[in-house]
Length: 512
Ligand code: NDP
Image 1 (spheres, protein in one colour):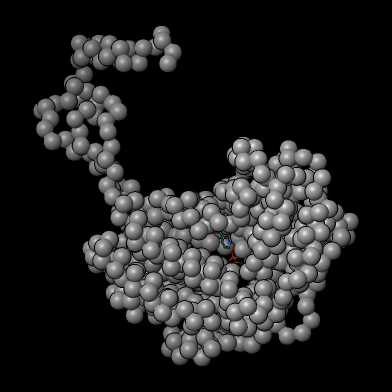
Image 2: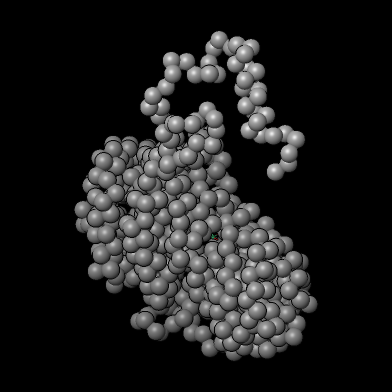
């Protein structure tokens, strides 16, 4: 078990103040990891800072060679990596394979190929009389030490995955994994060592919220993935030291199904992406709006498909579809949302309760007769629930989809592609798929990030690596006069000439 392999490392790094790691599918304690103090975090950051110059100096190609070694290490050790993820999250191995291992290895390959291009000097052309003939460019320079703070739902892809572009940009990284799922991060530390990363280039600070806060204090830039509530705290803390942050936060993603949609495909997508990873995905389907003429048919497909799902402790691949609730307090939130909906008139047509017996499970649950007075339609549930609401038409669906403080992802289903795109462009979210779901996450050149309370900044795309860098603007005058025309002393004749040039260039009487 991951536990046994991780325990010596945990003990070695430990100290008395250890955190117990639980397998949520069995309830067993599987490891203990150190709860790092603020002083220990500061020491880790100091080590990372000392290692940074050397790491930056080995160039993109040198870093890509090591990260490629890590990619191959992950694939060679995939059984162990998957087992560790499964043990600490309770998810089925398929969710670990596809949404963690595939995504992360693809991302490493992507950044190895694209980092150099995205961070190459950007030549800038003169746009002003005063910059004619100057050489100008933007250089992207690493911040130094980046702190990545990760959540418990994707301990590989949303924790180590976000370290990859930071490292490729020439930063060293201190990763603070969730205290609920720290073992995968420790495994990555081992992988990076074996891939040949120099000492202290990638360090893991296991611990609780206080450890996360200490990371914010100790590093030069923070990328945070987690809840909106904690994201606010991170931003507040970062404000004390004016440390730049990017935040990938919660979501309440809508799915809109129009009456001309391929209902079979839409229903399969809703069930998969509503319940995949136990619904514990920031971009999972959290609410569905279906046009009246196809509502009954759509609901009946969802009910039939949900009833066929197999849930239980993850065993061999192919044995279950839905695993456990990873984080204990999450069960209370899911239950509260279901109960609140029922009290306000909703009906549970599948599931609706915790599973009795060993481990922590909540049944895949379908809710109908829901509306926006209910928490299940307005607050992030982050569990295996699929509330489905009947709407008059696309306009009503759009209005309801945008009636939220979140704006992470979304999807719209119709055979009329032109109309689909036109409606998609009116959804207030970081991403919208038409006739697809979640696949935009695998398109690493598409920015992935949230609007409103779903975050700020993006992962993936050029912006997803430039965020780990200072932009340094450089202007070079190769040959210049002893005194520029606008320097002292100011002279009446020169001012008049400049005034004439201004009017000539901008022609105030002629609108453009
Ligand atoms: P939390 O916000 O509870 O925790 C996220 C991380 O922050 C954990 O490592 C946590 O440590 C740490 N932390 C807690 N308090 C502080 C603090 N004061 N300062 C700094 N760090 C702190 O989120 P969850 O782990 O519960 O993750 C689930 C949430 O993440 C969901 O809301 C989900 O939508 C969101 N998410 C967003 C994604 C996106 O890309 N937008 C992707 C995946 C998830 P500890 O665990 O030890 O308390």
